[in-house]
Amino acid sequence: MSALAIAGHDRFTLTEFPDCERTALDVQAAWHDPFFKRAFSVWDSKRGTADAPFRRDIDAFDFPSDILPRLVLIEVLRGPLRFRFRLTGTKADQIHECNITGLYSDDLKPAMLAQSIRRDFTEIVETGRPQWVELLFTNCRGHRRRTRVLRLPLLANDSSSEDPRIGFIMSVFNFQKTAEIGA
Image (cartoon, rainbow, N blue to C red; front, side, top):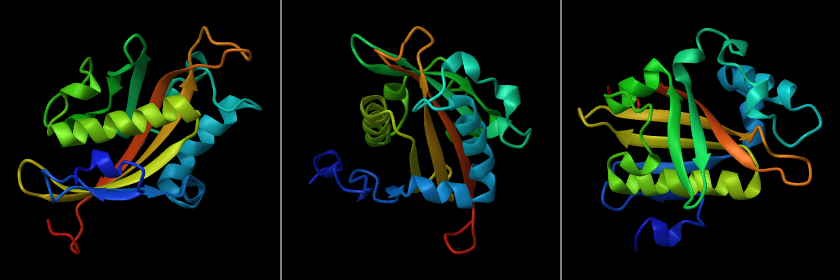
């Protein structure tokens, strides 16, 4: 059974790449993680009473300097629904080993990872809710990585309270190599 066939599950292995797993985490727990709490706090303070802040209300320089290299801004395009990387921090470029700014999520390799990301981004657009996931994978150089990603919706600048549309997804990630999963 493919990973997409079990997309409703919170944890799955990408079948073509058995060294890659995705686990949904409790978003509220991000408030207890010292790194993610700071990013979540900025997003939360900008949204006020709305479900999400507008893109225009978020500035990269609102974030502490150690978060900036781990910040990714994804634009939501419609007709058809696609996701384009508009801003990527240097740490994101290191993980992918190229600058992904301007690329679409469909361009990521391997294809199953791109499909998983598309499914996650689509869920954020449809629900308007933040998402926190953990990825455990072997990168293209054979190194094991554990990456936690907090994805936060941003309203399109031209949306309104009658028509709130997610126009961007802001992603903040923290990855590590640990002794327990290998260097």
